Length: 127
Image (cartoon, rainbow, N blue to C red; front, top):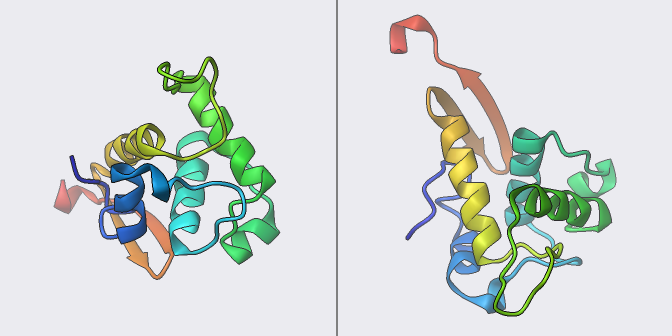
């Protein structure tokens, strides 16, 4: 199943995260793909992510805490080897983030320019 949200679908690194464990996103990772995860966590859960992490597109402690909170709220746990949620964005987490972003994007236009996302509600003419 491919990533479907506008925020994630064209990001090769996040598509890899959905497909293979070696692409899990963990503390210390950095790049546009991390910034997309940060945007999703802010949009979906109102996460508070440190400004330094946002500027550096860094998966640091506050981003990891936001991912953990997202997972705990949705009981995202791989029961084959875990008893509780962790702060890693892996297959199950990126799929859940993508599903929720897709729902938020419906009825809106989302423009992704680099890693800056602007959410605009459609006006009545486009409904």
